[in-house]
Image 1 (tube, rainbow, N blue to C red):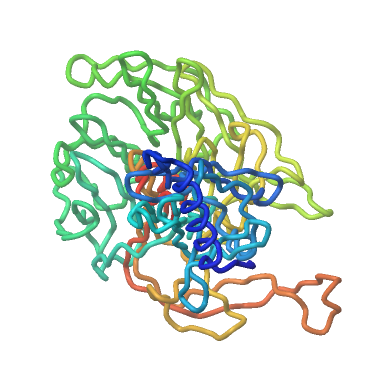
Image 2 (cartoon, helix red, strand yellow):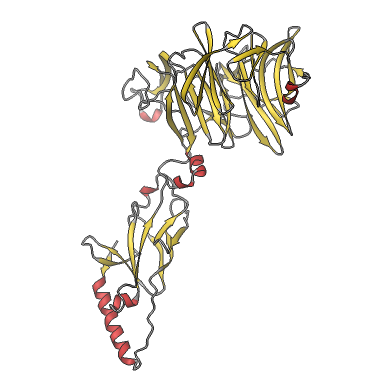
Length: 503
């Protein structure tokens, strides 16, 4: 950016004021005190986008409220100021010699860091009123974090005695994690995933296995194990529930319909499976079990996960789980197990779409489905990638690499332990998931595991790079302690806490 020295301009204004003053016999001329910027804009930034700038006259700040994309620093390192307007002042900034020099907006300028400018009124330039100047700081705000990326954080450690499968729920403002230690089922309680306390589960029945489903309600927790229903008011002490009859295999979902919560579960009767429902309010009085319909043979039976979303004025569920037998489709003349999602509107169960080679989600032993940022995501024990659906579970595809797990780059070096500094999720199998819909966090709780291995596709070294040929490569073994990780989409972080808008 070329800049002109101010001294010559100031001399010109001084001469002009002397001549003007001599022509006025009364010497009663009022000079403009204007030393403020009235308009500021930059050239377009990528794809012809123009960003609006705010001028704070009191603080002397010029900035954009909507931050530029995360990589915009490669654009604003050499950009034109399109508009920089005052009524009658002259605008300067310091040159390399620390002298005030007039800005030439026809030359590009580096705005990666804030710059200071000064507006001089005509009186200040003439030396008549040197205090009639005003300084401004121009700051172009750029996102430090990609808004479309997941930000992962290590939350803290759990007890390392947790080495088996686990399930976690939220109840009475606490998180309860269940896992079997030795021959006993234990529950680990905490607030905010810290200060864990462990207790053995007390029961009048034989609840010494990890329940295949746990359903937290307002005043009670329900669980299924050994085709029985158990209930608890504190998560520690359990009794066999008398509110359910017959062989209850698993709870499927809970769905709020108007002012009621409808609980859905599966029963086995005469060798067939049926959907049943019951109202939560009835659990305190005389429960009435309602049989809905027979369960389709393609409906999952184990490790069921559901999410709830609003559609119009009603709520609906989408459910996934492990299938027996596996549901397979043909891909390149090979049978591939897939995940099939089911929808429930409180009345009818519907299989969502038909899995095809270009729109399927792979099968997981322990799948999790979440409704997040108005989209549906599934992930599972492989922790290779998320799968996303924009049409309510009908079709699926791999999520963007920005929306991914914190996997380690094994091409640089091998690791024997996953740590906070070098995290690796792939290959993990023993975990549970909790979603904080208020603060938009996804929490994953991991049991301690040893000798974890997995296989990933890597580029063949001997092939030409443009062929993109790959081959499977075994990784590991590695280990990790029992721990908790959280993730949140950066854009949601910005929206929830506006002070981070520029980050």
